[in-house]
Length: 75
Image (cartoon, rainbow, N blue to C red):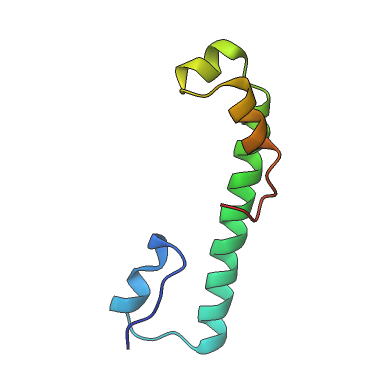
């Protein structure tokens, strides 16, 4: 049975033996929490970059500010 994946890291679930429902839910929750945590850390770091480094990654101060204030659950 094909499943809609939340993250490419879970693609192995389609090839492996099925997990118990509770294990699959727990795994998906863990992946989402890890994504949220990474977004939060990345946005905090982005807010602290100086203009030279922002230029290196192709962002203006305004663009970085808009990204930095997004809530962690928004992609």
